[in-house]
Amino acid sequence: MIDRLRHSLVLKLALAFAFTNLVLVGLGGAYQQFALGQILVQEAEDDLREETALIVQRLNEAPDRAVRDFRDISGHFKLRVFDFSDHVVYQSAGIEATVPLQSRPALSDPEAIENYRDSHGIQLKIFYAPFVTGHVQVIRDFSFEARRISKFRETMALRLTLTVITAALIGYVLARKGLAPLRHLADQASRIQPESLSTRVRLEGTERELQPLVEALNKSLARLEEAFARLSELSADMAHELRTPVHALRLETERILTSPELPDATEDALVGMAEALDHLGAMIEQMLFLAKSEDPSTVIEAVDLNLSRLLESVKEPFESLAEERGIRLQCEASANLHIRGDGTLLRRALHNLVDNATRYAPEGSTVVLRAHELPNAIVLEVSDQGEGIPEQFLTTLGRRFIRSDQSRSRATGGAGLGLAIVQSIAKLHGANFEIHSRAGEGTRSCLVFPRT
Image (tube, rainbow, N blue to C red; front, side, top):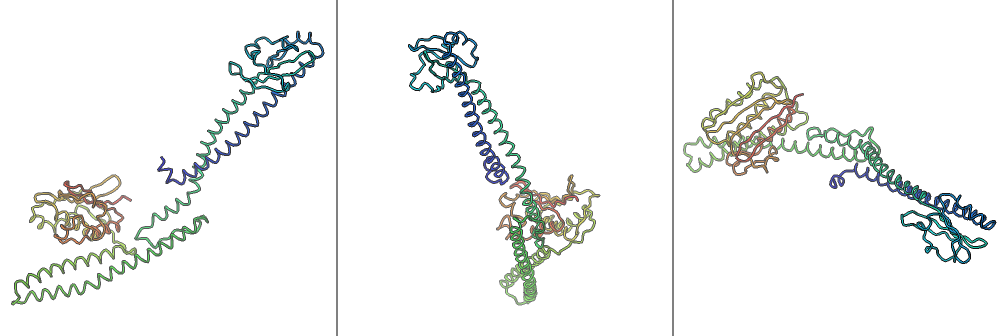
């Protein structure tokens, strides 16, 4: 959760919105609670003073009759009357349990209001006032006001909780809505692939704050497009320039090999040179094909292909080589399974996969060419029972000049371009190239054609 929060702008904005509301509502609630408490305290003290003034007035006018009438005093009040000798003349029923007599302070300030809490935790306010023959102690129950303050505090806590939750949800929704243009921009950018670098992110209709980002992104795409174009041109130009001298060297080597007086050592060296030139020529042809296939203007000629016949046509050239190596080739495909694609390109891709499989499959094993249907795709697959590919190499296969075993590839003549060609042909057909392998368990190479 912490890691998600650290990397989520939406969550940060939602929490910031919620925290802002927490502070504002919390401060407002605290002020309201303080103001309410002040008002209730002031009202209670004013009420206490008014009631005390009435009691003092009655005691001054007729002390004896007033004492008899004190039974009519309000239930919020209790009363204790002292004479000049501090003897209790009258006290309300139950007052001893509420405010014991010894709790009475000295009357240095007869107008003071004392805050007091009885043994039951009930809050009281005590007011002392003199009259002609003594003084009174008037006690007011403040628990009603205390309960109102406590209830207000609970209400504010609930209100604050609901406000924070609501603010977080609203902030989350607003943040997602506010960042929607950024997601739309990311969606546009994600659709730009190496083969579609000429595409630009639309500036029209983009929010003003995002326009500098769009302009910078489009400038970067323009630089990438130019760099890719130069790289493709360089690859094609190099391949074209190299093909002619390599071919000439190959012809000259063959001419020299026809000489009848050629020493054996020289002949062996020339044979090795011819093989190296053949390998170099094949690599140049592969580079030319890759340069052409990665040109954004390249369009394949798609026709209806019967996959059973396609696999048989790929299998046929490898049968004699497989027989020499003790490998069995097997085709598995429904006679009615079809796709639309370029037959020449797909045969070339499958040819590369079968070449790899037969080259590294152990003697006595089977290489299977299979075409089958999935609920949402059609799959062309070449599988072998070889030693498999180490896991650390799986993510890099399909890149140029990448091989899973450097020494083995050199020994068998691989240049690391075969799978790159398969990858390019798959892209031209809108398919995915997948390799599934585990060391010691063989390899499955798949061309997956999504259903449209």
